[in-house]
Image 1 (cartoon, rainbow, N blue to C red):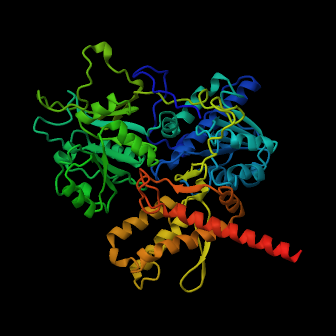
Image 2: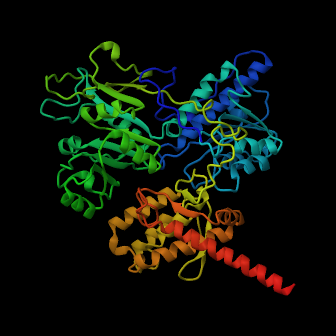
Image 3: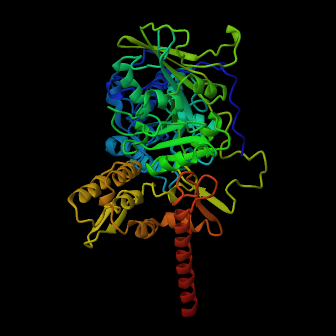
Length: 616
């Protein structure tokens, strides 16, 4: 595999558009192209619909844990009207991993109008489930042409869906390859922006990191006393909640916890609640703090190995996870977040930690809220500490800066590092690996899976495969995913109305991420409602669900059997029971159950073969 490109020098990059917080495609009327030649008009139409696909994809941000954002717009053949909105037959976006794909939703909405139509995709489909739903949805709908903004940035997915569509006789045009008009520049930028987190992760092997701060007009984030409530106005704080809702994690330093006692939740914004991470070398943190209340959101304390072990135990008793590092620094913490599968991280720290993160080159974008206030103070803290720069010519120039007035405040945002366009970096599936043509990166004795975008993502309990399982009364019920079934059965059979309501709440969750969040939160809030035998039964519950899943989908059984001879590892770095843990210290029960199921299936196949041989 090719090594990821090194980050570019700070402040040096081509211009990129600003990352929008919340576009509202439904309120954005499609512009009518000017009177031009037929070929130019066709390209103009393509560019407009492709940008709309990117806008549609962005609708999933903040609704569930961030993931690759897929949007699909199906446009009918040219109608005799300049109102391009009338051309749109259907559109859809991927709400979350484990939910129906954008292509299927758009095709269902379009119905018969999809026949002979063109589908616009901001990103090549990334099918890790072995059933090619995205491709088959477009084929069965009668789509004759597909326009793709970006090839998938992950190597094991790149080009596969495009090749599958072309093999079905569908014309596929990829921007920058088959479509090279200047008219596509803005549309391509929109496609890059909406999946900036995935692109940064693929290129630099760290999550997309945003530094956010609020300061006065004279550049202070607090008074000399440390008092900081409130620098910015209410409208700006609501915008911060939106930023949190789009992030996997929010990071602060120990000083922020001691001084401000923040909650760091995405209040007033429905949907995803990010993990809260506190970085503290000495673990010199208060005994009581809002962040130790894990009913609202999960909290991780990142500290140096051996720091205040007694206090670490107290945090663990409260449900706070403590992760020790040999040397605590922003780069290692971001590598850890990468291993956890995070795409987006929001830094809301003070000047010392923000300076360290910038120097470590893990900050990619800055959001600076400037309030029309002057506080003064020689010792009043500033948003960024010492960077070791002595001349103004050394200053970091933000790229593609944008400005937005929010009530009385001004929001300035810009990139420190540009959104990486991986097109010339990652080879297509048709190219021969340059390192060793005889070696496949997947020929290994250990097969790891975790996130649903992994090569064997279908093994995940979050994969979008409904299962039909009987309840305690023997009635067969349909569960959207294995994770829905597993989380609900923490409370199943408990003779309590509230427990039954929790089961219904989990069953209705729109994604496996939401089901997991509800199940874990309710388990912490109401431990008395969890079935008494849960700890002894949870492995059996998971195994029954896995057996049902693989027996219901033959292509999954084939995928599982293809791993014969390999060790399966659920590579979650923070789950020490179902996963392999950060350094292999986990019990990996999910991997074990899959290997047990694989052995059972292989045993059944051998027995059937022996019976057939004896009969012959």
